[in-house]
Length: 387
Image 1 (cartoon, rainbow, N blue to C red):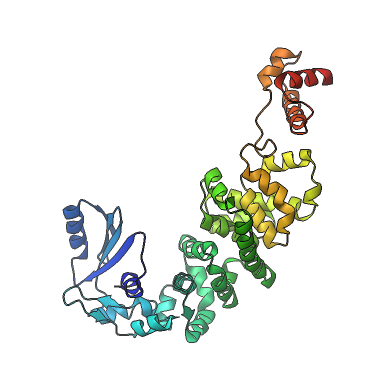
Image 2: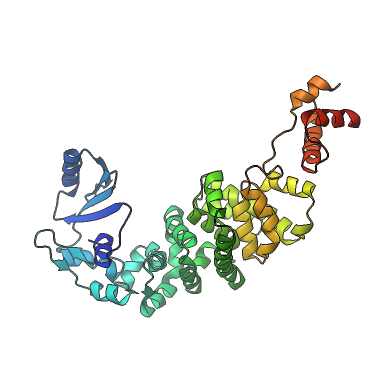
């Protein structure tokens, strides 16, 4: 029942299956027997409600005791009508007491009842996430109800909220539904200071991303290769950088509350720290020295930083020189390879270990990228002349 039946009726294919089975009783025992028979994983999800999960490499099967006296009653406890359809495994008939098939055909997300949304306020945000997934319209009465009970979202654990929010942020189709969620008061419970201007930045980011992909189709793959990220996580983090406070310290607190990982928080806050360098100066007039120091801090967060800057008004053409450096793994400015080491300096010059060694190495690296030296010997000679 639920999402599996919905997707089957829509002929949507999933990378991993996610089946929900409802039985009259002994659900945990049945799940354990399936796991033993198939040599699969087994987890008891809720012993009191008799719910367990069988874990396969290709997906999961949740087995639950029916809630209520019948399947129909169980379905009436669901969130939306399109998720309240069951398939009888014995006679292969559909059980659809709420007209979910009709709503599927019409492309509408319609609540089962206001009480069901109040019972689990995460369902409020899930309406927009499923709307983005399916490209469905949310029923007007359902949106009215969501507006009325939107403050209840504060009762939901942040880990659960983040899962739904991350899909909306990362999906190329999610921005329209993010706008609706903001209009209906849901995003304000997560980001109280969120403004219409910030929502416009998200729309601008979508357009800039499309333009960037045309000009540099290997930009996102470079992000994936450099930091092991994915395109949807990149878009999500850039949009988060538009939503949170411009203060990196305040943004860190906000993202920590929403249970984002340390790596994700570092990417967003690192982008916010460097953002003024892209927005408040003429990039085309940055010297090689300026670019060198910029990439020392920015190379790990550059894709998120760039998208955030584009969302906030940076012209893509002005960033071309920096993008091309970022995309070239052999670029000496973005990815410098030391022309000499500290040991080389200590062996060749009258120096002792001190911070001065690091200063010399930095200046020699800049001299190299500026073309003033070409070899290790020239670097040592220049260092000697400085001394």
